Length: 295
Image 1 (cartoon, rainbow, N blue to C red):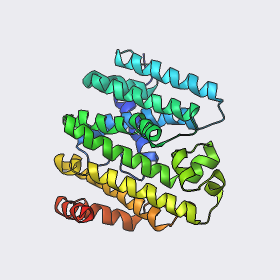
Image 2: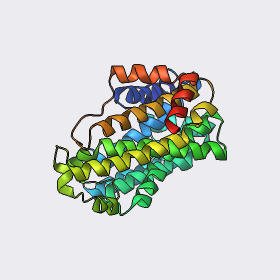
Image 3: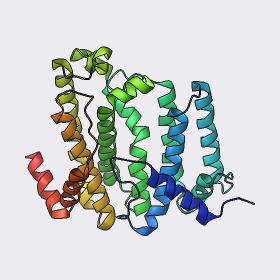
Image 4: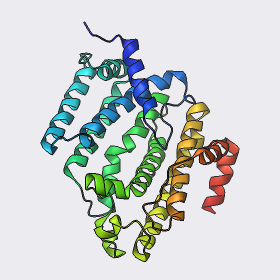
């Protein structure tokens, strides 16, 4: 007999979700009640697997083993035979209702394994391939849960999720490099702009890094804009939540751009930023804002 009831398992996942700061809202009160629980379970699972890949003093071999265990337990949950871990107890219930979620959940594990085994990316195509597994599955799962999983919506969602992932890379350049020895930036583009690894340790701006960061942010701005229509295609609270995520990403990109290549400066969203995000997430202001930006 499990030490956790289903209700307790869901509560455990919600606590994990609420305890981690994210620039972009996760399972917030804006979402319809029926979506908050499964999204919190997905987040708790992803947080746990991400910790396997990043946290602690494990060797790469141990991290790979832990991620394989996560995959095995995820598959057991899909069969209705979860382990005693509350995350998997709740996951079994989620997958019972939405079995199609299993594939994107397994895609996330591919990304976490890439974190362990791949620390450099030759070109932008390789970076986008990482986004295919690390970010896009999250948007596709939300579409599945909302009942809006169409071909067009998936294309918009992939653009938004990849853009948010790329924005995250740009704001975490120094921590990714100094703490994890990873560079999620295209090596060929770094070379093109004359940026080397020493520049990533330098906390002050330089002309090479300024030009490189300008190029990167402009590309991500355009990618985020290309997916923005999804914020209006999805109605109600889900649409509002997505518009807030898009605008949150936009605000982070603005901060990165204004930092003029100084990658040591914070891009954390503050109260004033969130007031701007909420006010512009209203449908009419969101439409006008993005229309103006694309002119």
